[in-house]
Length: 398
Image (cartoon, rainbow, N blue to C red):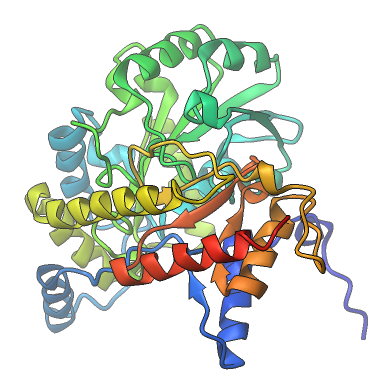
């Protein structure tokens, strides 16, 4: 039997975050005590009031097909959330609920991009952006930053990358993997630039909105002169510890929302009815209910930065959001423990996994090959042990 796959699937890379998690599970299955800091998932459980809303939805027989863009009540709750938290005006008709923000992003790529279109991706970037653009047969164009610039790019860099083929610009703030957060002034300058190019659509991934250690989250769609060129992507997975519920959504110009609904109607239809009712409860709640989780992440960030600052060779910045640290580890390139030579971040990630039994993800997956991503969505005791192992393992390299 011939087993030839499509060129499309053969051109895609396996998600390196999921690949590292898979390797961790394989080592654990061999009886090894691996600490995994590779996956982007809160270690908290979904709050009880959200779970109770899901149980009630089952009892109330929300068990049938749902409207493709989501229940109207949920889209109304999202509309109110956008206004309350972000001062954004999106009507329910401008909102599409999908099976996670990843699904929402894929909808956008498939509905807007044509072959040979170019998508500017602010780097470092979430691992799947690159291949989502490739699925749509468009070309990812990376705009690089460094730890010295707090992993943020300038409008001048963006302007230099724009060509007649540029169709979209994608970025996240707070950023996965760096934890960097664009300020209101920085977003305003980017918005002014893109407004000169009315063909370009900005995709603003705000999934880490509620894990933000600054005073207030800022959305680029808040500026009236650019809002018709912006799609705001969000969801409940990170802020409400609801990763397994798979609910993401967009607020977009009506023509984009209509197109995404059409696309979704052919792929998945409406997402899970019970998860939608749970998400509605989350979004209708006072945002202060998740402040304890946000504060826990802030304390963990400070703990991890303190411990990692004691490891020679690491260069650190202070993440302002999300739950990642993204140290520059290039000082270890060329070193060896006598058995393994470290040529790049991929080598160092595997060295830490095999020798130190700590799973982290190579920065190569996120467009920055001089870094590693560490998730601090774990307990203090786990983080302390993980950084201890990291320090001892890196000390073997000479």
